[in-house]
Image 1 (tube, rainbow, N blue to C red):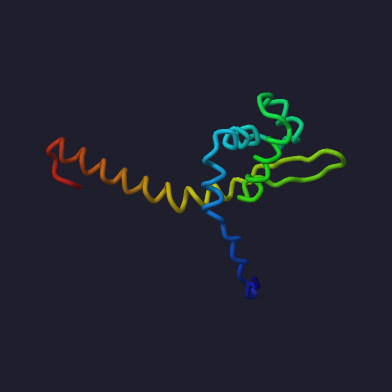
Image 2: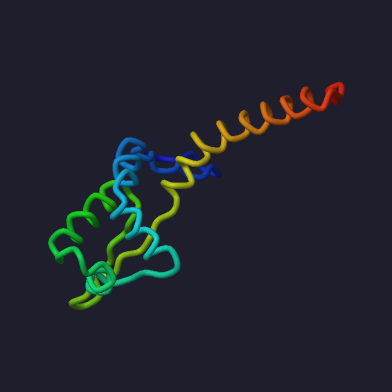
Amino acid sequence: MSSRRGQSPEPDPVDEDGVFKALASPTRRRILDLLKDHARTTGDLCELIPELDRCTVMQHLRVLETAGLVIAQRKGRERWNHLDPLPIKHIHDRWIGEYASAAVGMLATLKTELEGRPPE
């Protein structure tokens, strides 16, 4: 996509279905939790999830990469996996934040009604 002079380029579109698919797995959510504070090598992740073999960890990492949640970077013989939180922020902004605001508003109205006060 090209951008006009003086305007920032449009952000990359997020594959919402891919992000939801990736987040549906407890193992993939665990991997994201492990990457939350800092990048880790694939070997580190395998050590931290000993119940899975390396091939299975790599399969989960591929799903996370395809969804845009993990960025892999090769450094020599090591593959470093970095969390990209932007797709999760997109999901939050698009789905969770909007619905949470509506729910909070409904709860405030209910509280006001239950307390018998006139609405503000």
